[in-house]
Image (cartoon, rainbow, N blue to C red; front, side):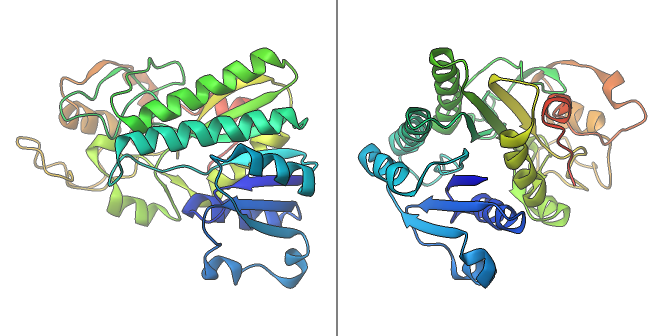
Length: 302
């Protein structure tokens, strides 16, 4: 396949880029900054013949049009470019960059005849990590793609809007298909995830490799259409002791505590119904239900 990949210089985008090249796809990559030297060094001479990188501001849709005209056609688009959190940025910038770039890429791809698109959404789309203290809440656990949206920060809002933009475009063109992948904390290994796991994130993660697999399957899987959101989260929680930051009264949760026990203490009063049968026989099963991705994309975490 000839694939347009945005955000290729980022942590997730660079992992996806290398995985696509390993699978012998032809890739046109786009970012506002150059590819990191450490990533460029991993591209073999034979792969370099199937790869080009372009510096491009995705807010400038005329430049996107030119790219599609000069380097297309593309069999699929993977859009990963975004400001990845509301921290350290003006909230207006986070919202505007993510929403405008998302629409420009999806709309331009559709206008140029691309029928299969993947975009990076987030488990934060319904509201999670960056909600104001005391306002995080889930009606039910495990979290499915049907969880209601309670967007309380600009990043969550931008991801919610990105998913709405996908629904809008497939409504116009029923032959268009867009997968919105709700990634959790994407890191190379479980061990790194442990170091970054926080109670506000519901103790979860996803690997670079599994995220790259989900992107490719979002393009290549068969048997579904329209605009769909998918939870892309590891099958077990990522936490082995201590709550970071500490929460008064919740000390003593050391070792490989089960997910239900952990949530009942760390998220006390913030969860409506916990379907405890979901964890029977698998006490450290993840708090996001990934059945939809496993069934429709045939995705599995590595």
